[in-house]
Length: 269
Picture 1 (tube, rainbow, N blue to C red):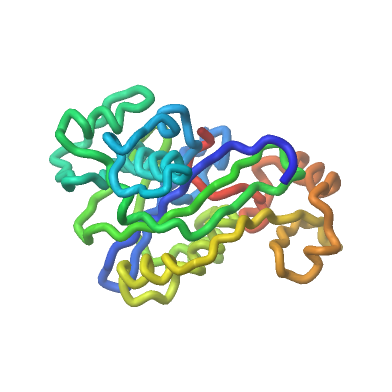
Picture 2: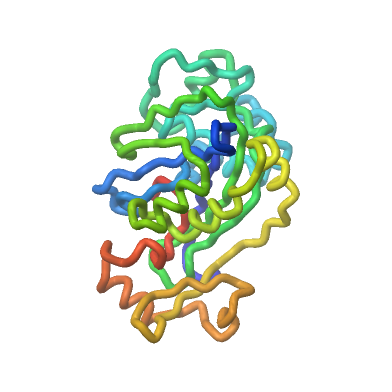
């Protein structure tokens, strides 16, 4: 990995629905500087408040090195869509969130609760290609929640939130209705086909997580392609891809959804 990367966390909240396992997805406002208009999972950069959180505010995390990522995942879930995972559980009567860094943890503490990371499973690590100037080292988590959980999206960051099956989300992307970042597509593929949210989380628990840092290339047709380790041609590419970066810069927001090499997440941090 080269260059500076920001630590970030993304959480796939899963529930049992009428047509199978559903995942909570959010649409970023179109005016967002990063991934505007994209459908993503709740998440964002790890900030100073997350790094400072101890067991008195965050329960269920045995590995102290993982604590900032878990804290960020749970904080973003509460901030962005008002889904609170706490010990004891939080019953949300109405959407309400105090402003300011660390406000989620303080609000939970005032209610006699701690954010609870015991149900989160770390199952993937995506790193933005080294050739790009804006880079994230993002850890992906999954958690099962009650079927009745209702999201309340933050209107400043999000244009909406929706529960749907991973298969439906992929179909919307294939039809051009939705823009999904590349890691989000790959994650939805992994979340497809499970019988229940609990089964999905348990299955992901046994993942041997290896960081995935894609490389870029320009196809004969002039399109930017993303290649991940293990795919044909990956070893023939370098981390530097000036032609691909120049093409993306020229295309700007018009770059096709399938080829935008951004790490999934719903916040630039």
